[in-house]
Image (cartoon, rainbow, N blue to C red; front, side, top):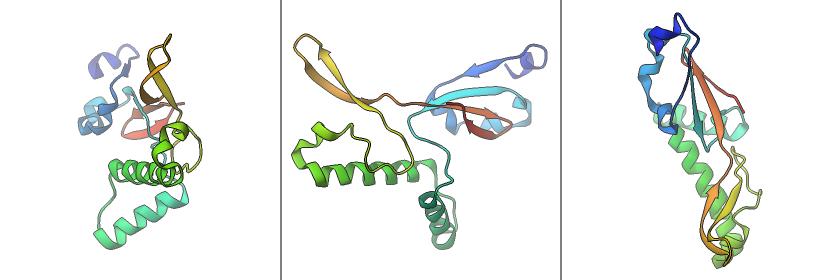
Length: 140
């Protein structure tokens, strides 16, 4: 695709796992638009993100991975909901409170719509990410 992009404009759409492919930062992929989705907001400019980054820099001499932010956000949000709602957490799991970084839109998925039988919950909010020349930006 990178070769063809030199002659014809190409945009590549991939899977969420593509965020970890470091080969896309190489010079042969220069100017190739690569899109993929993620359920988590990758933009980390808020105060909490800066504090996590500073902690890792000062104490661990490293940069936190995306999984650090995902884990922190998930544990904080769902831990607070669990503490507040206890065994009735499923009744409020779609609430918009306790947002850290990401706008979740958690909706029930029904197996049998006639019987209204709940199968599982799913986050319907996805972020579309564009990666060009190693720079990552949120499209919508």
